Image (tube, rainbow, N blue to C red):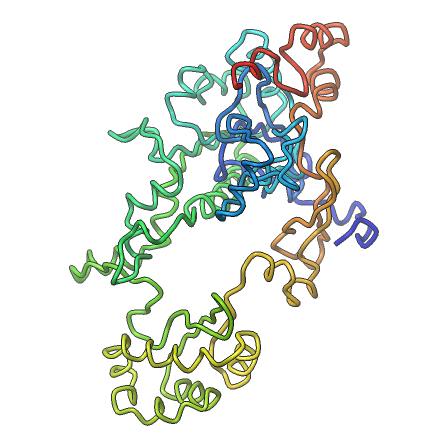
Length: 451
């Protein structure tokens, strides 16, 4: 969607979180995903980020490379931190796709909460906020003296969402971990592993981060509803591990109820076959197929012209197909190799067989389905250029919505936040800038230290 295709929004179609302000001190993806979602539905998201030090796992400023290095990383399949045209530019911290993917609809203020001046500005912001979201290791927040017990003295109506890897108590409280470590500890990596392989072959999916973003946004809106009814703010504790565990609850329950350990599943289904990814015409081209009944298996064989599969005694029943699924997968793959994945997808769907082509990122951005729904939105970011971004994933009949502002640059809204929102005089603001505490680039000392 482009700006000229956006409908007008009147007072009757205000976004549901308009008027809510959120302080954002998040890193990596899980926390920023929460504030991305809150911002998409109208909340004013204010990122608090220092220029006097590089915040790790945020804008990627701690790992800036040359154009040649970025091109090499791109050739090996790395995508998350590579800037447009492989060019780091003069401000590479504003050009990271990993950060910019979730940085739309946000504002940024430069503030180092470890320093007295930054702490004062941060507390002024908290007075003006409804919510604060953070996903740091607990001891980081404790050392900074910005726990909920302290912040609620500043703003009793404040809602604080805390998202450490393992929680605010227990023996793992201060253990550090990203989504992939959490998924390993709770068993997801093993479940995803193929039965003839090992977990190191599955790659990183970061599903725990994605789930936590949605669950965190839901938790905040629920807490806002509670505050509207009672007048009380509160702390929400949502560990990354515990927010993901219910997603694999069926496997946990199978063990607690039946004492059956799930083990390695790969693409397989415990009761259906064929169920997996099968090769098609071309290099590294695949289609996903899921057959749930004898009728569907017959329809699959009919589309493929696979009379031998349809009449093979081993595959005549659902139970037989599951028991012989290794042989079935091999035989089916030999047949699907002769088909184009897109044509086979449509042919199978036409006879009621669940199937879908396996798309790479380029194919996904050209999907006729997503194009027809106007999912991708074109945004122009100064110094970065015009690119297509994933759009908003829900559509509400009475509330038109779109991405309002492009990814936020470091300190982009310093003036309006310090002076207009927090009440600093222009002289006070200018003094903070002159001392290097507030700005739109990292201080020379920080940049020299990085080099």
